Length: 318
Image 1 (spheres, rainbow, N blue to C red):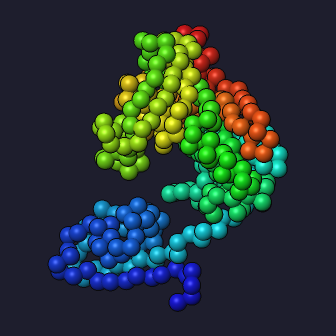
Image 2 (image 1 turned 60 degrees about the horizontal axis):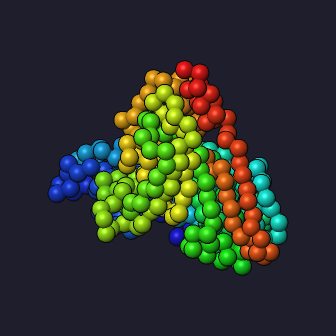
Image 3 (image 1 turned 30 degrees about the vertical axis):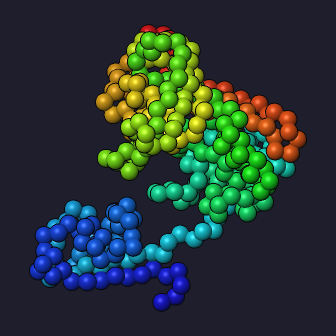
């Protein structure tokens, strides 16, 4: 078989295997593939039972012929994509971008194209050797549904310097967000460890003391509105979904966050404004770091986008 070609897999269901779900049967046949990868193959119609694509929950029968076509894993090399970027700051060492909500920072599960990393690679090809091959220049990340400032390194020296600042917590990151409920305190510090949620691989959760990774978020109330609070958050650590998890743990999930706020539905905000968010009501509004070459402090700011401002305006008029 040619290197990089799709790999067909075919087998007949035995009597002992009858009644098993298609996805579980396939997982046993292809132990090298993750459950997520197998589900993707099934959802994409790459798995057929007696010549017909079936769902993951299909119960197999004795004698059925299962055929799967497994495409090769994605190449480590990422293709550049000429996607427009909102550039806030740029020189020979650093590129700072105002990322829109809806754009993924770098390729990952379920998203291989249209990423910020691919757009940056097209804009500045020299970052191809900086950082990982699938994350060229990426120093830190923003969730897909979060908008705002993100910095990339254009040289190896800049990458090392900026990631070191993240580790030492000398890179300042300021966020603006809109959360459900009215905060009782004007300000506070959430110091609670975060780990992968044991019930869901796509969620994070506040972990038991002594487990997980330390996560610290400082918050300050900017405005209290009808059943909502507009606030500023500053990160001392940078865990996955940190602000979203921390605020939800206090009973104040972010507006638009279906992952951590499923039970928080509101008829106060029109559906079209929620849909217009294109993600969650979270915006990286401030970013400050020491320039890796000059040693001077770089202070960047991004105004609150209309997707969140429109909701604030609506709530202020109630």
